[in-house]
Image (tube, rainbow over all chains, first blue to last red; front, side, top):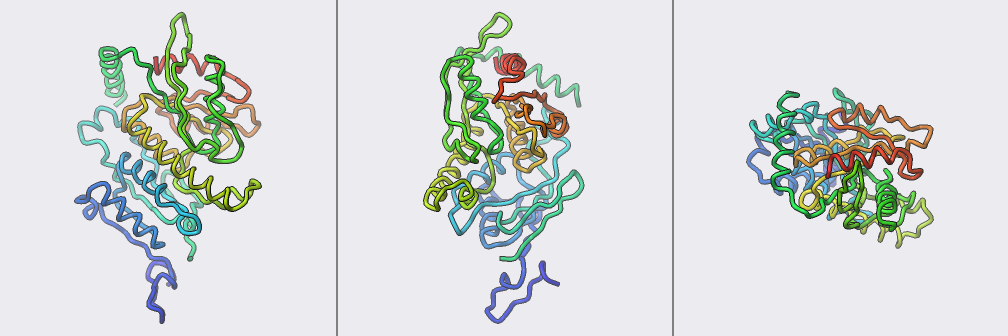
Length: 135
Length: 213
């Protein structure tokens, strides 16, 4: 099946045959500092991979992800990222209770990929449909 | 939960009042590229100071540096509210210089614009985290508001407890759908306007004075 489980060809580079998808658990991200998370994501995306986070990023981390992404964009090399999460229905009511239980516990499935390889076809509260192209 | 939110807002207003100083609040104008942020900033600045903030253009990323217009005094209901307006570059997660080639630019100019645009977005994000006291979030009401950038930015603004006004711009265009924006962000008040034509600016100023005064 093309896509998630690429075969290794004669050159030994599996990315030539398909698209690599890294699914990163919440447990793996939990012990990382914000910049370590962002580095982990961007290193994968810059290699052409699709990164799926089980639990997403906090708003502050999302802000830093945008900022660091911008500093790494370069012509004919890296044009940025495409990122999608489900809309968080609880944002309006996160105020006081959010502070009590710990603001920033995003817990939202997040898909991140290179902007030139991933295109969102449809997005609503229950479905994110994306088209991933090869290099 | 509505009760808790109201309680939080009430406490916030009281503490804001206790610690308020005479310094004008810095109000950042945020939104995606081409939403009309600079057109709005110029409209506000011209209406109350006579000056403009920066050049407007239909080409994306015309604003590539945050620009501040200080001491804008808005008079409403017998009192004066003084704010600094910070017009920020449109926020995005991707910039490809090739998009500028369609606007009669050669590659060198397009690459330069692209580089300046990325610096501008990073700068805008830094301002949002560190240097603004409130946000006017401008959306093009002819475009789908359910984008990831909008979702993330509103989430970032909410996480910092910044007061935010959502403006549905470009209501002078026939494709405008104000309700779509109101549906996307029901937790915030949506105010329709045309910054270009000056439509409904009275309501905009009344809300600016109420939210940021």
